[in-house]
Image (tube, rainbow, N blue to C red):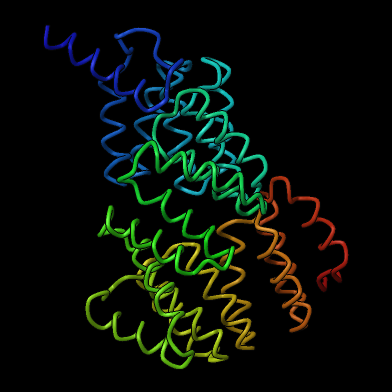
Length: 351
């Protein structure tokens, strides 16, 4: 009886996450193997999770839930092509669900295809994704697309559904700031910080809103004090400091802040911000090397591609540019045409 109850509990959990359609009964085939893979995923051991999920799929190629979770793991690993393939297979087996629609939204969002992402997040909510992630992401997409009222509606729905989740409040604050309602923005960020006091992003947004009321020269000093005391290690707040220093024209100092953030986090976003800050500071050799790494992180990123190509032309480092583009071409996916087009413009290497 305990065994059967555990199977039923797993199925209920999948349904509560918006994964309806992937489970057709209370008994989930291969549920113990899947459960072990999910433990690895939650622990952040993504490579091991891939091995576990692929092992399950070797025995059960049409296990739609394993396919969907493999898509999520691949997305977290930055393997978008593999993630898209897994999602296509999952949808072919069990149809689109709230879970797979949300993941497809994440896939588009990471590729900065915000209109497509918005449609997927909207589908995820309609298909039973009961959390707030899809709604918050939908609001962010609409804000990117300058649909202020659409963003407000999605964020308000997220707050209504889960008032103790910070995401909706943060987006409402972003909307208020976009509309120059700074007092309202501070209030929304304060609500986000209240419901999630350990959310570094919410805290950084709140601090940023508050320091804007200070004289320009005092803003970065206030953030520096916080980073040395109560907000030590808050990399989101370091990003605020970097933006303030950029606004003051202290470009080298801004770059150094992003360097510290990259050292602490080692993520692709921090690397991009550091590269762009080096570019603004006219530290072109350092910027070129780092932009090449950024392009390797994501060869489909249009902004990184254009900045890297333009910089290498400016530096007259055309042989270096050719080597980088040829090396990354197999991973360029939909951007392969742009890679080929740029390669055709470059002089052929010496024989």
